[in-house]
Length: 219
Image 1 (spheres, rainbow, N blue to C red):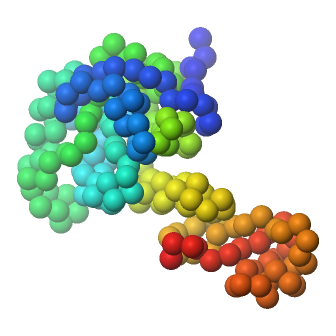
Image 2 (image 1 turned 60 degrees about the vertical axis):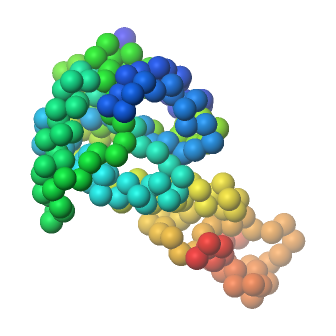
Image 3 (image 1 turned 135 degrees about the vertical axis):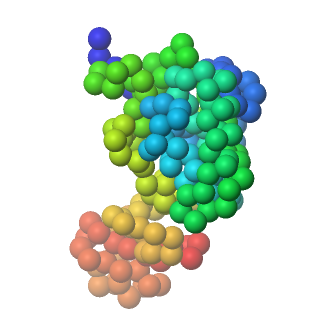
């Protein structure tokens, strides 16, 4: 049977689950906040360990953007707790030992959440792939990523993606390829303005009638 995957623009499937930080009602516990829900293939595995430690290192940057992180795998709660305690004693990328994993990790041993979010794929031996769902304050899925077991995600890209989505919502713009905070953003062309007029107006830059830039309003 084909894997069912929630689509961008749909409401995030609701669930109740046990986590390393207590019982979670999702997404209602995060109403009004952004959430990044992500799965990893398994506890005590090397790539997954680097991912959680990398997220812990920049967790404060997600907090500053009013975004919470929620991890998941099909391992048990006791396995999660032991794994997190082990990582807290590790040093990675010149980091200091003793750094706690500050976000909840869901114990999904019945695979109920994984099935609802299409996190288990046919060639992945019954465990979750590296799935990532960016969910907005209204509980709507705004972006989805899937990575294989072999390849760790770029956590800076997750942060950049969140920043871009927040710009879109705040200012009604779009973000170009490789956009970073402070870069120009894409705007819709005005209905009654030529490319030359637009270029001269308020710092707007027009490359063609369909490609128009303006400065980042939050730079």
